[in-house]
Image (tube, rainbow, N blue to C red):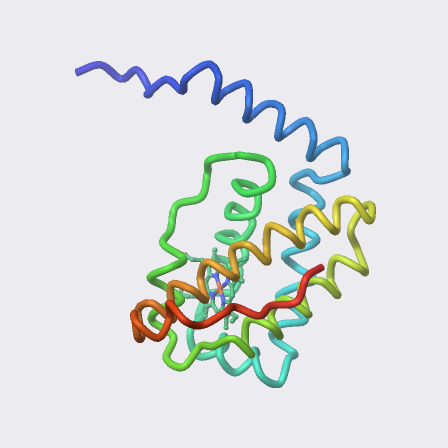
Length: 159
Ligand code: HEM
């Protein structure tokens, strides 16, 4: 056994560097992500529908916000520092459905409108969020009723 960390393939390293560079060129960096997470979860906690879903499930907000910072750094900057299981966590919230994801996205887009460093950054981040929301919602539907899920169409707002 050695302590050598696993080495990424050179092409994936290059791709990661490129994604990071593109994001930074749009003004997306760790400081912006921290501001975005702060603003968004302040809005979520004040929201009449989403607030009551989060409050009883999060007993340590600074920890959750840290987790969300690492999540978005991994998505937007390929930081690779997030570990968690979003699908399992959202499957465990009973009754979570399309209307909740619609509301979540509208709040997220409003946050981006307010603070994104550029319209291009808002579109880039908003599209990622929508894609992840779609995959979480599809996972929830498949988990609930596999056959019915196949005939349902996800309807979520675009940024
Ligand atoms: C329908 C709207 C949503 C609600 C009500 C919701 C609620 C929650 C709650 C209560 C948790 C904490 C779960 C726990 O630690 O046990 C959580 C975690 C998380 N959520 Fe959401 N969420 C929603 C949508 C989303 C979307 C669209 C994304 C991504 C774009 C997202 C990303 C995450 C991540 C990354 C975590 C941490 C997962 C982990 O630690 O493994 N959520 N969410």
